[in-house]
Image (cartoon, rainbow, N blue to C red; front, side, top):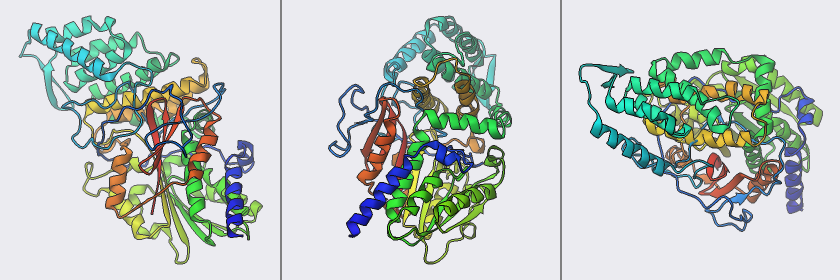
Length: 544
């Protein structure tokens, strides 16, 4: 009897997670949850990624697959809309290369890596180094004219080496140009960087192929860094964001054409639903509530529970960043979810904590005795500053606070990228690699002159890229870490991993059937990795 009820509950959950958007929109909820950027920053780098198998290899199902193999999304190749943005955030064709610029704690590798359709990074790196050596041998440096960028004394403004690099710029492809320009900026070679940017300007296009579009935004990040105006440019980009309906339409567009956000919502909901299967009183704390769209299907699934629905209370943590997009405070979300619950006959209560994650204390979460607690971190923790930014170390402080509440389950979804404590040049390479894959996935869904795509990339993705490339210190809020580093942080906070059931992977695979077959799913080391071709872009894991 109990097994039969569990089966019915599982079927109800999966049925409701796959219902069309129209049912959600009938409650005046945008099916996209805006990912806010809590004004916090941090640092911590990781790993050399391990090359994976060729992307054209035949993949088995997750259940029969060794832990290190890919799972093909099994979807048809015809896709009208498929692919999304990760503030989820970042890509290039190189895995993290071994060089002196790379942070020493890069030991937490991802099972997905590769070219993502671009040249091998190590080969490119060698070509650039050979060019640099050759130019250095021929250079005649004038020691009298030096310059500085971000207060770092650099190479002379004019040098034979720099002139030769600029002269050869027309022979480089866009990726080579970007890397050469980033290296010039890193070395404070202003004249060389400006010359390379002049060449870049002639080739980039926001309506071009993926590397042309990405190069346009990365070039702006380099320019802002060169002018020591990264934080100013970043803040201006935030001010230029469309408000209300316009911003929501761009975010909803990305939600529709890419699986990254659905991956976060669906995986977390299945994990939490299974953990709370026999609980009568449930409290969910969502640290990135935004529109609250994730919980519509969750509430509806609870309504179909055998024996009647449980009582559920949702606490939404959300700062003012999302207010203008949402068109109101957290009370707007609470009322919408209350309407959904009432229509389903689910006892419901909502509590809003209108503060950033950095400000959260125990009293803000309203934890009550007798309620089974679930905590959800969807693409949020990477905005929290760690020990490399300030001594408060809010990233680890928040994890310890949540652990002290003895939650039944904690879900973590993050971008699989290494931009936290990595020095500028390897961070630039990682960003180029990550976003190359993302822009390729977007390119597979829409014509290159599509105005919606151009606006969505400009208003929802470019800001993240500029922040990663141009900003430092507390101004750099996009600070991603690889899953290995998150695992270490959670373990040190006292958490233990919760194995993900087959139901979680099956739900994601079913969802991926709507998208390009180039999306891949890997179950490894206690986490699900979502990737595009050979590059991991996001991970989901569960803890208690």
